Length: 116
Image (cartoon, rainbow, N blue to C red):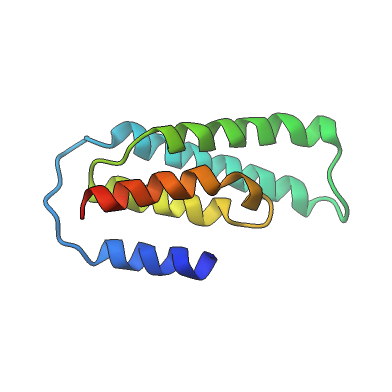
């Protein structure tokens, strides 16, 4: 799945579409926030050989999941929006979040198809 996501990201990046400034500003900000949350999750997991304590992990994972839901619910309307959404999907496909990214995958593919 990760390889397919990388191919989609490269394919999307090959288009030369005109951009409308700031059309996806909210989506871009959501994806930037998600990248920071993903880094926080990885940092927590890197400190423990086994699973981290629930009281430490749950608040971070709840924020991570909420951001993923917001990204999923926000349609990309520009090529840049599709790029950042694809990058978020690539991060979410990591084994830590693989179970949570089916909706994001469908949302991203719907955005890609809209540019058909």
